[in-house]
Image (tube, rainbow, N blue to C red; front, side):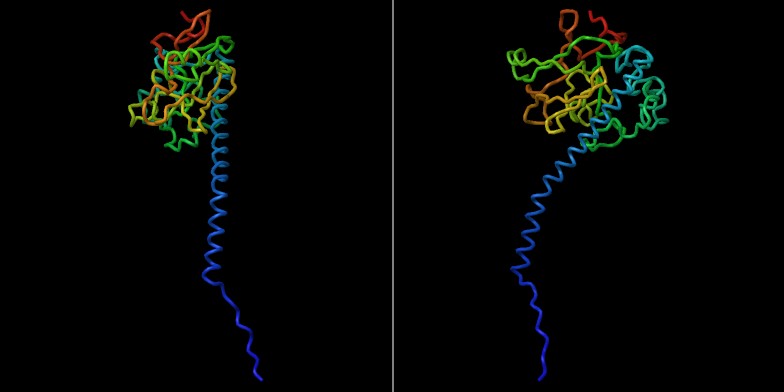
Amino acid sequence: MCHRPPRRRGFTLIELLVVVAIIALLISLLLPGLEKAREQARTAKCMANVKQCMLAFTLYAQDHFVIPGTYWDGPQNLDWCGRNNARFMASPGQFRSPFQTSVLFKYFAEVDKVFECPTARRQTNAFFDYTMIIRMAGARPDLQWKMTYPENTTNPVQLINSVRIFDGLPILVEEDDFFFNRSSTGGFDDGSWAGRDQFTNRHNGRAMIGYLDGTVGMIKPAKGPNPQAEETGDLQAQHLKLRAKGQEWPVWFSETGKFGWVNNPR
């Protein structure tokens, strides 16, 4: 007798569909965790960027007893980011980044992308995601002043009742993309934080802050529901106050020749 080998049974359409459904379910379960891990890595890189910046500020202050300046500090050419220094303004095409003309440049081992938050996903060196509070220009590193901000900005009563003190004296702020860091929204890539500028909230609702003592922290700024519109609920530079000499002082504006004002506000 002739014996035929047993026929191999293939997968049925229903079985294939079940396998595909299981794979799709596993992917849907894994992807959020994977994206969360990626964002944690981006947040860690952003924090490392700010730490590197604050280390440069600290090293500069050790050599010069004050930190450098920012926009509207007069003709000292001490703009921390280099954007408004005479050397860069005279011939911007010669430099890959304005920071190459900064007094802080020599304190960095590597500057490529160090001013770019990886979550922002913008063109490298086009803007500074980390910007300096404009009236902190020329601060001494041993200042004992405090700075406050309101957790709620929707009305005058809540502004007063929700005031909080920063963990240190803030210098660098992670600026919001739209208010006002992007030129398409009338923003300015000047490396300063002033006027109606806002904190970003790209890190799970939080922003990085670099403090005068070299440490780095995060803040969860008040934000309205529309990220691309100015709203009364938005925390802006004009809401911050410097507590010094028994008074409170605004830090959202500056004038030519005010370099070092923060050391003796008046």
